[in-house]
Length: 252
Ligand code: BTN
Image 1 (cartoon, helix red, strand yellow):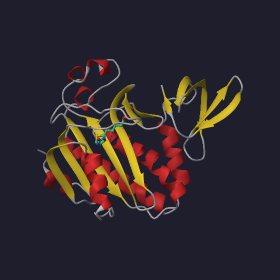
Image 2 (cartoon, rainbow, N blue to C red; image 1 turned 90 degrees about the horizontal axis):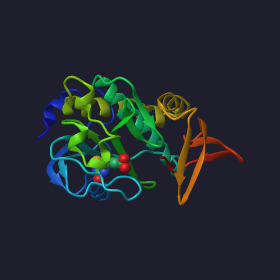
Image 3 (cartoon, rainbow, N blue to C red; image 1 turned 120 degrees about the vertical axis):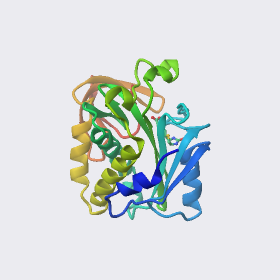
Image 4 (cartoon, rainbow, N blue to C red; image 1 turned 180 degrees about the horizontal axis):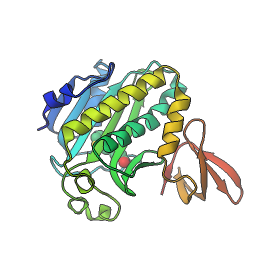
């Protein structure tokens, strides 16, 4: 169980202040939040689960976690943005998640495009943003908090970490409040038209800049040197056949 009052007591934002709804177990907080949003739930509503039986990741993957070891939640957003600008929410959520880890005491927190949160090169959190444009977006985040990466499925042992491996006293209430406070700040900036500042911050956090990597986009894998983020936070890469911009995909 999460102490929701302790989370609420730490909220400092003006816009994203709950309500905070907790379920000991659910299929997926994103599913719950999408359904609640479709039935009219307000912006800032947060669905938190102690355990998910059908957690979803990006690209149709499953998101596995041990009961009560993670911070699993989804937040409903109703941004007054043109449809074309809804994808800007993706880097925004990544920034807030990275800053929440830093507020928890982690150093070396970076993002791997498009939106994996890594500490010292290992994934500590995943983000799944789903939208019903132009009405709402649901941002679901799963932080590995307690235990060690060895408690996760064996295929993740080499690439994942938990907050407990990185900071002295991981605190899920503090982590959730820090995320909501950071998101509130960046979200207000987004709505105020300050996308350039957000892009600058997102660029600062990107760990793959300057690296030669393979990027999966649709059915195609492209290898090249990642030189920059594009004006919409896509990846700019130099390949043997010239410069390309990839807006949707994943750095492998
Ligand atoms: C990824 O890295 O592939 C994204 C993982 C997103 C997982 C979170 S956990 C809370 C929310 N509910 C879900 O079913 N998925 C997201």
